[in-house]
Length: 253
Ligand SMILES: [Zn+2]
Image (cartoon, rainbow, N blue to C red; front, side):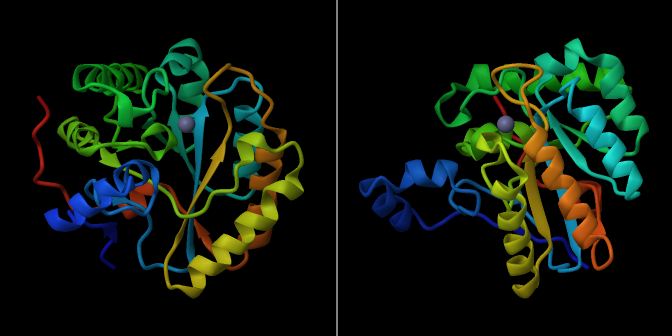
């Protein structure tokens, strides 16, 4: 089945109209926005769920997550903050050896909608080099922090061999203190996506942009709840299974 990527480029007239109404700011952050180029969200495979975890690695919570995923024989994708990965190399290797896909989430987690070209490239490239040095293999996926991007952001990612990734199921787990603030909402979104005929690309957080060992008990418990609930009916897949066709957009200067 052909993977689905949200595709490109609204007409210029529409862009101008949106700019007049402040729509460009929304386009820079809204996951399903089509204004700023293609990004992988989810293919038309309603029986599949990609669990994705952002902002780690987290030496306190990521190992617990690895145990839970292993219990369900599930593979996931982790979007790592480069500066944390550099401090936790054995854990990063353990994550990969556990069968999960590791991906680029920038070095310091800036808002790339407001980051200049040179700094954007540094953030992506430094993380890419660090992860590839730790793991000895190419890194293929990139998620912009906050989903924030502009056209250069995605061009730059592609020039480094990275597929930009957004999501279609999120529940503000980074603010949650209890699993019931997260799991019911994600369950609803997964079921909604299934009814719409698409897979679910679920965002949770095993880390946090402000500190290395932030409490992610609610997020980890939510992951366990989703695995328990959906394992009988769905396949949990890493993003490699949804790899879109290669982009021809290679300019990053
Ligand atoms: Zn993040």
